[in-house]
View 1 (cartoon, helix red, strand yellow):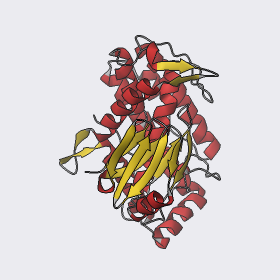
View 2 (cartoon, helix red, strand yellow):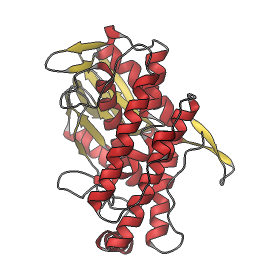
View 3 (cartoon, helix red, strand yellow):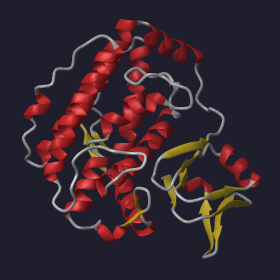
View 4 (spheres, helix red, strand yellow):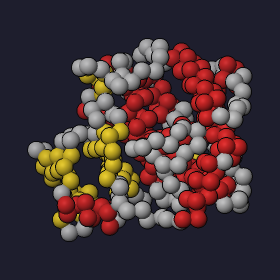
Length: 317
């Protein structure tokens, strides 16, 4: 089974035969290409021309982040899954106001359900979130509802943390430890979602809740938001409350960021959550959370083609 590689130390990715090697002052480590789903670079990393060709031939993207965990860009192999018919159908649903609003509302319903699921798993009252109605037609109205949902969720989440304080979402740079972890987690989930979208015929820049903008894959934002409460925030809660992440795992300059050891712990836990398998009620087999993201994208494909109306995931685990 293929797995992601997380690079947290400066170095060089180079090629020898059909193997990727990571080289730095600590030595040389082999990364067999057939085992890599994607590579995440959280430290300065140089890619040789040889390794770029090998990665492209094997459809392995490389994602780059700054020191605060913010996504900076990707090396993306040429698209392997292309369907003009699906992209045209996807675009037509974006251009049709009612069709776009329906999909955006479903995304909001999925986000809301995930928030409620996490709160209930911790025996926290979710009534303030349940009372927020998902309705509206314009992108502005729907984004306003999303803001209401996250505001209520953050307030509940703050009360669930035992050892770190969290009063509001802040970024660029994050000003406290919890916001630092949220930034790292959201960025990784965004790129994992992008990797899964690329395995379908969808175009990652045509979105429905978030506005499509230049230089971002906004459909990844739409789908990733459904999974944030039950992946990123679940991991943060576990790490903080079980004291796996402490003050010593952060450093400060202009803002707050995870140090190398903190980043190692955080990424290991997040990757474990994404690879965690749950019993799928319809497929009647266990699938990973990561695979559920791809299934969500496939559900959109069926919707665009008129095969089955899209209903966003309602988290059950």
